[in-house]
Image 1 (cartoon, rainbow, N blue to C red):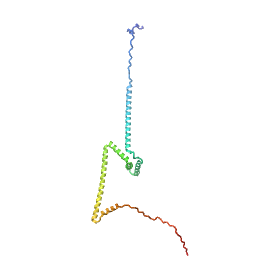
Image 2: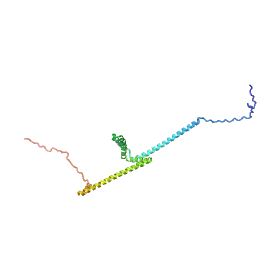
Image 3: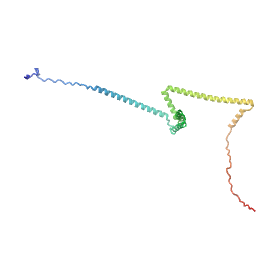
Image 4: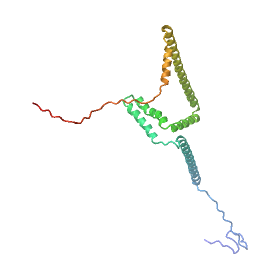
Length: 239
């Protein structure tokens, strides 16, 4: 087998070589992306979004809690007056509630369940009047803010109850006036039939009683005991 002869100045393919060296072709790097990169980026974005939403929820919750604390603090300061101490009034209210549970221990369950808070509500205005007034005002404001329809019904019910109570008082007073009128008519009728002056006698007695004045106090002295002593002794001689 013979070897192929290459002449000087020519390449192995028979092409004449240039006098000057040819520049090397530039090397171009082609960046090929990893197939897992999109999935990793998508997972990272999802985790970042999730943590960002959780941080927003936590921040919102903290803000709501701080707002709630401030509202509670405002309501507590509005209810508790600075010039009325809670002790011992609150202890008296608790004692009245316990007293109700003791008094109704042998009653039915609804009575035993309702009596302690009912006694506490009744005794609260007596032992803590300013606190009770402030609490009623705060509850009324909350009712007007969150339940306006119920507040209107409540006010209507209270006003109706007060009106009925005033009407009952007026009827009682009217009955008293009617009773006095009937008594006066009966006295006048007896005076006409018998000729006695009962009205004048009654009025004179009232006038006399009204003019009585206390002058002094009479004290009655009674003997409690008797103290004796020996004054003289005489001897009797028997014959």
